[in-house]
Length: 436
Image 1 (tube, rainbow, N blue to C red):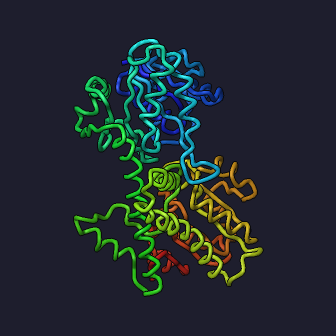
Image 2 (image 1 turned 135 degrees about the horizontal axis):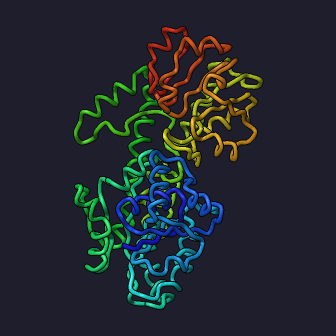
Image 3 (image 1 turned 90 degrees about the vertical axis):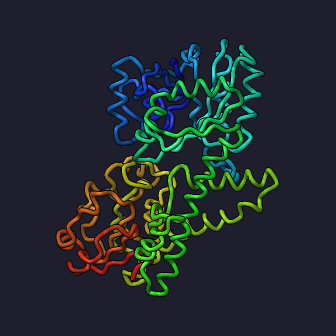
């Protein structure tokens, strides 16, 4: 099928490549000329395992191209809206500016029957509003249908999640729209991905509900870890025991520094804001505490670092391992690791940061931090090391080798995934979160 993808940021770039890999002819549209030039040259705007290879492959096959001109999308049968919905500067709600601009720019080019499909995470009720807008602005008017197909990408696994998702959600108003989406995703469905067909509001709510549940699960175990610390209990063993309960499961019960990135934090806040607009604010008041617990983890790690080196940060050297909000990503949006690094720097510490992929993006946000060329360089002459993003490279560090370059053997494992016994055996004062 002929497909257009409006917006080629994280979601759009991955989706455009995924659609080409599924055999469709794809044009990606973006107003950012530099981004379009890079993509056309086979260079992805973000780091995502497997993305560069597929981008180059389908640029060469001719199935994938990019443009700043919306007219290039005019003959597409399906148009995906993949632009960002950041948090508004004046509140918790989602900023719909980019979605509205994309729809308004696309609509005049829709002169024939087609399907516009929203993938961006939006407040419930947006789909119907956009459908009305398309009917008003598109030359084809009532021949332009709108559907909602929310994305469930995990950074670090986004290509896999596009090609082999654990579910597909189709929010539609007609059987024709469902047929089109099933044809578009035929290979994915044949490979076993289940399909859930819903109305538009339900499809819009699925993504934010999933994110709210995930955030709640993460903050729950982090709250329990606070109890474990004062009770001298081990949150990792506790989580193992909870995980054997089939009603709970072990995934995402890893206590640590908490969640970040461009989705979970802003999505749960936007969800609360939208519930308030609909007169149901009481239903999601618990998410305010979920958010507060998550933010408190960052403050707690900074406190532990200060305590480990005698209560005074001014002039002390801190090594921060990690800048991206999670491994296998260069995304530093609302990164807990970078937030902690910034806190310590503002309290007078000399902070050296290393991350395998997130350095360039981190420098744009905190240019005053020192950025080391390697993990060992970051640790050199450090009074305390903070392990804040769980890259495999950090788990494989040799405690004895690192000990040879530091001032003091103090380690905070804020992700609870290093070998505590190995580090302690090498003479380190090891501190996990919620662990004795």
